[in-house]
Amino acid sequence: MRRHLFILMLCSIVAITCHAGDCDSLGHIRSETSVASDTVGSVKKKGFISRIIEYFDDSNKPKKNKKFDFSIIGGPHYSSDTKFGIGVVAAGIYKTSALDSIVPPSDVAVYGDATTSMFFKLGVRGTHIFPGDRARLHYDVNFASIATKFWGIGYENNVNDANESTYKYLTSQAEASYVWRLAPNFYAGPFATFDYINGRHFEKPWLWEGESDRTFNIGVGFTLQYDNRDFLTNAFRGIYARLDQRFNPRFLANKYAFSLTELTVAYYHPLWKDATIAMQVHSRLTYGNTPWGLLSTLGGSDNMRGYFEGRYRDKSEIDLCVELRQHVWHRNGVVVWAGAGTIFPKFSALRWRQVLPNYGIGYRWEFKKRVNVRLDLGFGRHQTGFIFSINEAF
Image (cartoon, rainbow, N blue to C red; front, side):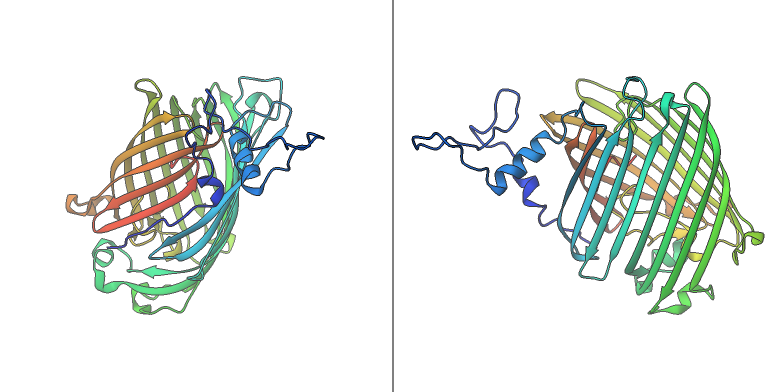
């Protein structure tokens, strides 16, 4: 069983906890600045911890005088798979039109991680909403060097613990879509993707079934989106539906030609005071000669939390999740979720016995207004995973 253990976050997060006598009636941490007792009445300089407390105490307050509200958070972590590491996330919220209170704010996040197991990742992702919400630009660019594990392709190989093997790979990925608003809450437009994956140091190379260790893919396609959520990064109510159709043809210099259809439908609804029920159904289907590095997978920080990312992989996957989100006190909240998912090469190969369960519990701390830092502990079939990230899983 793969047990991920969270050791410690940066002292800045620990410092935000309100101790007895340290909070005012609104739960805001008071400044530690004190008045010196000398005759001049000079004020002592704030200490390092005091400055950190003040910084995070103010981080979720709206900055009406700032066009770009930007903050940084990070800290050490540990897991049995990636070992000790340092993760940093910088999040920004901004509006393209300060006079428009209806259009939701744009968001951007820069993230990085490095561990003692030679895992390195750096990326940027976000959504830019143009004035009047007439168009939206979604983007995600990342680079990574990863030492990880592989169990082969297909459920029967993946469920076999004896297939566990190590390998390393370098990857560069970029995805961008530009959509126009064609009707209220309805958007459509083109998108493009780039994927480069270079595998090496395979412990059990026969599990790759003769596929090339290095793949280069360029894809183009279109996206259809319906989105009436009240907030992009942490919705309390609304519906989000997205259909992506991607093509990787040979005339774009792709050695592996294939197509991909991805569908996401999410629903958010308030239940009682400060509680939200969130539900999502997601499917990723590929057709043709899909390379091993672009097969559909389960696990990771967003879907089927608790499973080793990439252990279960095949041409297609389906997963669903129901999550209860409850604000508890001041900037603190908790979530519980349950779900299931499976992988398969084609619909005729779907089997109930291959459906994998998923459930877990998480803690939320409001880093910025409606932007949460999340700590999730997920459980699966013979697997456990811990996740430290920013924004909700969906």
